Length: 223
Ligand code: PMT
Image (cartoon, rainbow, N blue to C red; front, side, top):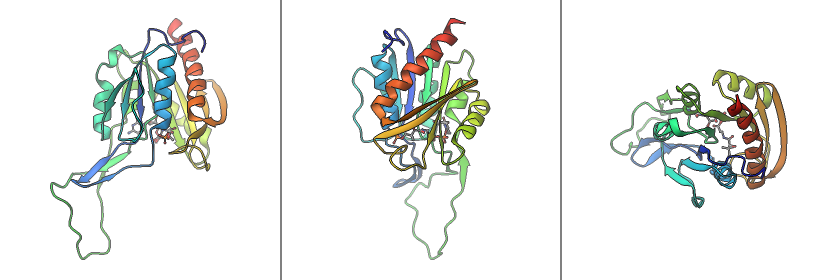
């Protein structure tokens, strides 16, 4: 590491999926394993930061010397992200947040009926990283973009739309990288920079990403 590039800084990282309940026993979710976000938390810790990891339900152990806040839904992830945000210097959103949740949560298990087709009514979830980026006294805010085509141009759109400082473009259609795999390959996109980080283990990639994010952040913090 470039001599503890995040020394004395507080970093919030979101990781894993969210679960959006349908009834007491069912939910809508996705295949995020949390590996990318957890690796970033360890890399940020090793770069000297105080790290708060806000994580959806995953099966990997909490990293040592990292504050770990466990949540289920997008709303809970948002609440945990906004708690103490004024003390946060750098926010990294690696979680795969469900864009929609059921309009209501059934109090009892939904019974199978006679109909062949069942309709679910969904409502948009709050956008956590965009809410953080719009906050007063906002931290330096880094998002991810999980895309299956035109990865860099969609990421550039998200960077602008969500008013982020940097975005990590992730091609989640390629086999062996992205959701739930041990390796990943990304492109780090800024307002006027594009840097490709080739496929490697998520731990290794997280260290490369934290080094680069810290460099951009330290430039920004100087001004
Ligand atoms: O967990 P792993 O198995 O290791 O997989 C890693 C990963 C593929 C999940 C990760 O590298 C990744 O790409 N995370 C972002 C997944 C995603 O949902 O991307 P998106 O393009 O839908 O969202 C864009 C950004 O907005 C992301 O930073 C996301 O965290 C954030 N977001 C999205 C919706 C929402 N309601 N709130 C958010 O904060």
